[in-house]
Amino acid sequence: MGLTNAARDAIATGIVTGTLGVTTYNNANSYISVGDSATAYANTQTELQAVTNRFRKAMDATYPQQATNVLTFRSTFAVADANFAWQEWGVFNASSSGTMLNRKVSSLGTKTSAQSWQLTVDVTIANGD
Image (cartoon, rainbow, N blue to C red; front, side, top):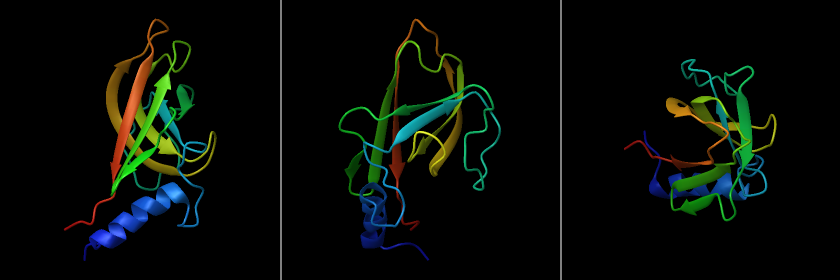
């Protein structure tokens, strides 16, 4: 059984506004974290799997954004931030600990101190129909 569009949109709104009873994923609380672990995703994970090389970055101004059931998160990693191979990323609602909204294992390349990278994450709350 899939969600109705109204329920799907209400969940997306609740994530951003906090009406679901969790810490909001708003500009003050949202972070994108990157790490160097290629460990497969499991829905029981609560943190990125990298032990040493992981880094959380706050949202850029005006993010996250919501368009109906799509949430867009964006962080810019400066030259001194996260200089290692990016193998995984996730969105969190705190600068440490907090709740991991999602985690993706994907090789994005190796960031160096000569580069500033911007990571944009779109999360779609789908109704499964």
